[in-house]
Each structure stands twice: as C-alpha cells, then as structure tokens.
Length: 482
Picture 1 (spheres, rainbow, N blue to C red):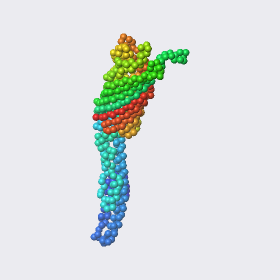
Picture 2: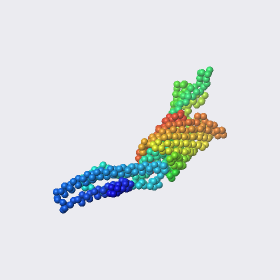
Picture 3: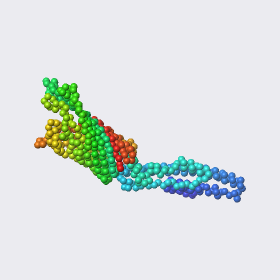
Picture 4: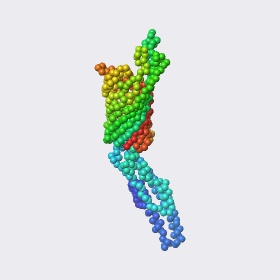
C-alpha cells in the first residue's frame, strides 16, 4: 500500500510540474533524516555498539542524500532550461506581433509577458550533502532576470526595435516610418553624366563620299547636391515631408571640327550653383503589413520652381562660320531647377519576409505649363513663349537582406520614362522638341547601418543602364530621429 501511494504521489507531482517535484524531493530528504535521529538512544544501548550503528546508518543516509541531490540538480537544470526557452519564445512572439501590427507603440502592443516562477529554495543540507548541493547549484544556476527577457512593456518594445532596426531602416528609405515624431535627413549625392553625339553637316556624293563638316560633340556634367529634409509624423498613418536641395553643377562642352577641321576640338565649361526646386510631400498609409499583403503607402507631392530655370540664360558664342552661323555656343551658367510647377503621385509597398525585405514603387509626375521671357537658345534673338515638360512615369523594385539587427544590403532597379517636351512661341503653335524624351534606367546597390539608436548611415551606388541615365551616382544620407 505504501508503494502504491508513493507511486500515485509521484504521478501527481509529475503533473504539477518541476517546481512541485523539487519541493517533494526536498520534503523526502527531510523525512529520510528522521529514522537516524530516532535510532540514536545512548541510554538504552551500550555506548560502543550505538556508536557503530549510528556511524553505519549515517553513511547510508549520506549515500542516499547524494543520489537525491543529483536528481534534484538535474531537475533544477531542466526547469531552468524550460524557463529560458519560455522566455525566448515569448520574445519571438512579441517581435512577430510588433512586425505584423506595423510597429505599434508599446502601450498598444502585447501585454507584459508573464513572469516565470523561480524554483523554490530547498532545505539547507548538512554534512557531505551540503557540498554536493553547492556544486550542483554552481553547475546549473537559474537564468538571470535580464538574460534576453523583457520584464516590462517598455523593455519588450525596446527589444523589438533592436530586432527590427535593419527592417525599419529599409522601410524608411523606400516609403516612410509612421512611428517617428521628427526625422532630420542630411544627404549628399554626386551624379556623373557623359554623352557623346556625332553631327554631320553636309551630303553624300555617289552614295559613298560625304561632303561637308563632321563634328563630334561631347557633354560631361558633374552635379553635387546637398539635400536637407524633414519628416514629421503627424499620426500613425500620416507623415509630412519637406526637401530643400542645394545644387552645384559643372558642365564641360567639347566640339570637334572647329574651324572646319575634323582634328580640331574646341572646349569650354560653365558652372552654376544655388537653391534647387523645393518639394513638399505627404505619405499616407493605406494598408498595414499582414501575413499575405505588404504595407502600402500613398505618396503625393508638389515641387515648386525655386531653382534657376534653364530658360532665358545668356549664351556665349565661341565660333561662327563664314555665313555668320553659330557653330559653337555655351550657356553662361548652369540651371539648378526645372522652372515649372510639378505634382507627383505614387504607391510604394514593402513586405518583410525574414531575412529578405521586398519593396516596389510606381509613380507619375505631371508638369504644368510655364511662361518665360525667352525660350530660344539663340543668343542673337529674344523669343518669349511657353514651355510644357513631358509627363513622366517611374517604377522600381528591389530586395534587401538584413544581415543583423543593424545592417542591411539592398539591390534595386528603377526606371523613369519621360515624354517629349513642347514649346510654343507667342502667337504660335505647340511644337514637340526632338530629343527631349528619355528612358533612364538605373541599377542601385545600397547599404544601411545603424550608427546609434537615433542615427543611420545610408550609402547607395547607382549604375546607369541606358544612355539617358547618369553614368553613375553616389549618395550618402544620415537620417537622425529626434
């Protein structure tokens, strides 16, 4: 009966968990020590025989205690591992919930994780058992309170931010972050543009011999732009942006066939700097990210013609032919803006599929008609008129890989299609300008790295894939969250 009761008790302890089992073992150790105390009776037995029996009983007790201490240490170690595993799973679940819900604030996130009960203290042993328990406690210590576990909602939110920092940096570059109050973005970009064009002025004789002038024109342009931007999170679904660029541009013009000789090359360069076109835009979150759909954001913006327009700039004549026809002329300075108002609209989407982050965007740019005092590049005449830039469509897609919680690498393809621009002189009709349509495709490689909890370094290299795109571009930005 005692054996059956003991077996039933052990089954009940197994159901109640490791903590109750540890308590039962400690109680068993205390109970096992009672017979030894009860058998110590020096008044009823001789002193010599009592001492020998007590010594033999003490050795047996110590052997049994050592075995039970080993079992207790093993149970404590298993219990500690289960508690540690429970904490890790709780952290992973909180991070997944934060990613699915779109990085909600800590107050609206999951409730504070439950605290796992620490194993109950066992009775202090004596003699040799004390040394065995001390060694077991040193080999399997309980997990510390801060070993990768968030005990409060604030710590859980901070842990989620650390785990998703590389993802949020990619998201910030592609569309916007709606959980940040104010972000100041300082960016530098460099663009290199080189285009060669062969010009033939004459006719073919006998379908084989060209009679006339052959000129090779080469235009090399270097543009450096500093962009100061501010991003203000008005609400969890709306962000307002303001971009103020400062542009410095230098262009080198080369023309072969100067003076009628094909071997003679004339060269001249001009430069210009100043405020560029300021853009005000807004990002509106349409859909939050879920298990099957990406986070989708609507982007709308307005660009004001605050930069120096390319119309009405004085031209400098470098060469004329015998008939007083201008053969080579360059503008006195370089423009820093387009000169007309523009509006843009687009959609951007980001989907995090650990460890990859997929993103894409489409957009449309519409330019309004602008009136200028002189739209002719002939320095000898002044012709006022109107200019309407062609509509532009742009699309892009890419993928980023999060190396760790601070660094990510991205690769993207972007393409912009521009329709032909049109001009109209006063009293005339609209005329399309040949050569103003463009197809600019770029392959971009980017890296984001978190410098601090508030600052991120963004580097991007763009490689032109078509003649209308820059040969290459290099961009560095440091968004700083206030």
